[in-house]
Length: 487
Image (cartoon, rainbow, N blue to C red; front, top):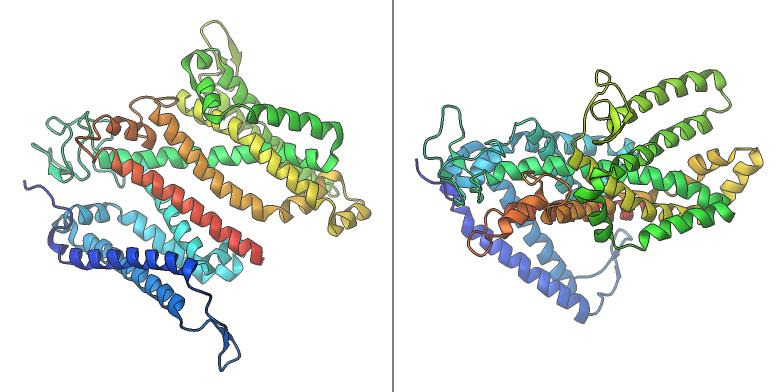
C-alpha cells in the first residue's frame, strides 16, 4: 500500500493557497505599518446620510486584508469539501477531513440554528453579529465536538494506547505493514516514539481538555461567586478575612502550587480528596441559596423544589468525591462515602487531583473579580430600590448585582478556560497529575519534544491543537466583550 501525500489529487490547489497566504501576510504587514504611519481617512457624508471614511491608502489596505483573508477561508473550505468527497485520494488532508465529518455536520447545524434564531438568544445570539466572536466560537466548538465524538470513537482511526509493530516514529501518511480486517490502513499524522497513532492521541486528548478545563473553571466560578458576593456586599470583617485568605493563596506562584498539590507524596496523604470534599460543596450552596432567594415568598413551591434539586445535587456531589465507597481511602484509614451501588461515576485519581488543583488556584482570582464588581454595583440606584422594596441581601446579590456583572464575568470565564487549558498542558508537559500514558496534549508534546530535532510530527499536532483552542477562546472572549458593551 502506497504512503499518502498531504494533498493527493487536489494538489492543484496548493499554488493558489500559497499565493493567497502570501497576499494575506503582506496585507497584514502593510496594514500594521499603515495604521502607524498613515493618517486617519477623513469622514465624508454619503448620499443616504451615513458617514464614510473615504477610500484612502488605509482603506485600500483594509480591503486587501479583508479579501485575502476571505480567499484563504474559501480555499480552506475547498480543501475540506473536496477531502470529504474524495477521501484518501485527496491525501492526508482528505482523509482527516473525512474522519472529521461528524464535527463538520455538527458545526453546520449549530451555526445554522444559531444564526436563524439569534434574535431570541440574547447575548449568545448577538455573538453572531461579531466576525471575531464567530471565528472564536467556531474554533472552540470544533474542539468541543472533536472531544465528544472522539470519546465515542467516531473520529479516531486507532486505539490511542495501542502500539503497532514497525510504526515507531513513522512520518505522516505511512501505511501499516499488515493491517487487519477493518483496521484503518494509515497513520494519518505518523507514529510517536512508542509506535502509537499521533492523530488518534490528539483527538483523544481533546476529550480530556473538554472534560477538565470548562468544568474546573465553572467550579472555580461557583466558589469565587459564592464567597465574593457577600465579601463585596457586606464588607467589614468578613471581607477582610476572605480577602486575606485569597491573597494568601495568590501569594504563591501558580506553578509552585500545582507542584505541591499533584506530587505523589501529597496525593498519598489524601489532601486532594479533602480539598475536593470542601470545594465541590460550593455549587450545592450556590444553587440552594439561588433558588431559596428567588422563591422565598412562595414556600409551597420553594420547599419541594429545594428538596428535589438539592437531593440530586448531593447525590452527584457524593458520586463525584467517593471512590470504592470512601471519600478518603488511604492505606491506614477510610472515611465513608457513597456506597458503590449508588455511585454514578468514578473519577480517575490523576484527573481528580488536577481538577481540584485548577479549582483551588483559580478560585481566589475569581473571588477578587466578583468582590470588586459587587463593591461597585451595590452603590447603584436599582440596588437601593431593591433594598427599599424589602428584598433580602442574598436576593439582591444574586438577582440584582450578579446579572449586572455578567459581561465581565462571561469574558473572564472564557479567558480562564484558556488559562486552564494552558495549565493542563504545562502539567502534562512536566509529567504531573495525569498518568504518563495519557493522550492529553501536554504529555504528548512532552514525549514528542524529546525527538523534536529529528521528528517534528509527534509534537506539532497537539501543540497546534492547544494553540488553536486557546486562540479561539481569546477571540470568543473579545467577541463577547464587544457585544456585552453594546448591551
